[in-house]
Image (cartoon, rainbow, N blue to C red; front, side, top):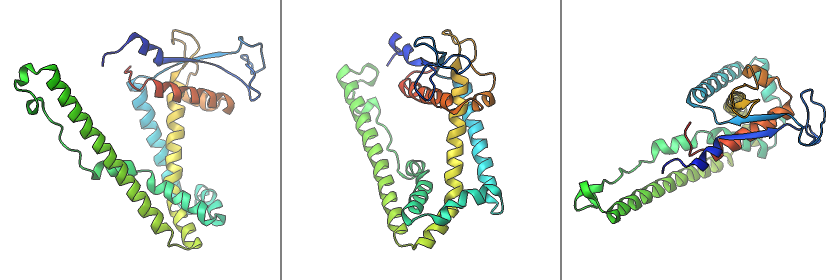
Length: 249
């Protein structure tokens, strides 16, 4: 489907910054009259910035994982302290979260994707296929894709059930031990997404409608911004990116 002019509106958004009380704020962070608050303009980032965001998020995740591999490190001690007092339910949730983090990738690696049909299977003359014949091809491809996604979903559901059944056989102490083994995966994944959204959002923010003047000189500057402001901008960027998923920059 071709790009429509209306789709271009999905590329951009504007956020009026507010404090914790929901009041618009000025450049100093003080409440101001409605309509006079600081505005930040966002746009969906391009391929280079997207690639860099993922690369740096992977590096942050890897560093977190390495730190947690050292059982004598401060990171390890702080991460595992709550687990020592965790209930069976809390430990189970953490273990499931860790073991389920790569289930979709595992499913797509193990569920064979059928080959898609060619127009030759539906058209008398493939070089001059009729509209009806093309529609039959599209319908067949759509059905194959639907069946494949259903198979992937079923695989994930089955594996999740197996994980839950296995965990149900363990004692509280065993669950806590398993949770401590898995904490590195959970926290590394959390670090990945935290860094990813910091990187994406910092690169997406501008102070002008034309998106020429960057709101943040560096990603570190964005990270040091008040959490209430960061949260507003990250939430806005996530919604913007979701709404423009069919638009390429």
